Image (cartoon, rainbow, N blue to C red; front, side, top):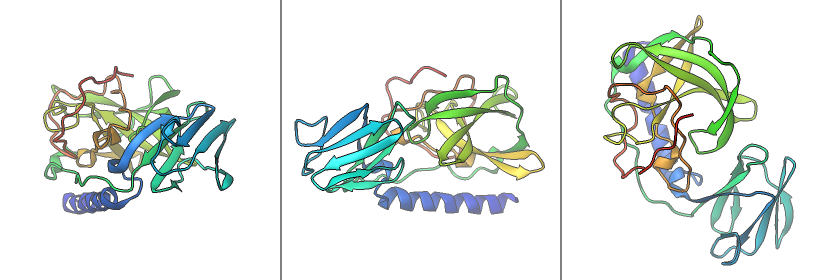
Length: 262
């Protein structure tokens, strides 16, 4: 793809994300709480595990892989990742078996548009995906703060920093049978123009066993938008020893403590 065409695609992606961030009922800007459910979790009154103003006493129960919501209107099954309403709040339930959590979104959220560096054609690289040194899976937090079992996909090498830099790539589940190739990286802009904990960037297949890594697509984890989300730990080795001034920026206060590498 020509650089001009790629810049147009990135601009459309940013516009779509801005519209979603501004209006979606599950926009990370609207997240007000995220809490593990365990075997059960009560919601509603002030004495509930998770108080929600105006919501009658309700309860989320997890048994094996089945999640149910009980309340004044009876009982119904809740599907992972599918939003549902309780009073004026929107909720989603997600996470692997044994670590299911609920996220609560308020009826309104502050306006906080995403900010970006200017498009940089030199921040786009095409190459091969090298096989992983140690195939397997690892449990970690994804872009949206949801705990997932990610699969080691391999690594890519980019000419950044003091020389070629190798970055770990993982398959991150996106729901159902689908997964995305993602890289969670840190660079010299963290805490000085970008989010302190790091940013995610997708690795995109382009055919003939080659992949595009476009740092103009780098984006903040959801914890940059709301303290309700836990922040992913940096991936061991995925630190670029130079400033990557491409992709999403961050002007907020940031984290005082960054989790240990995984």
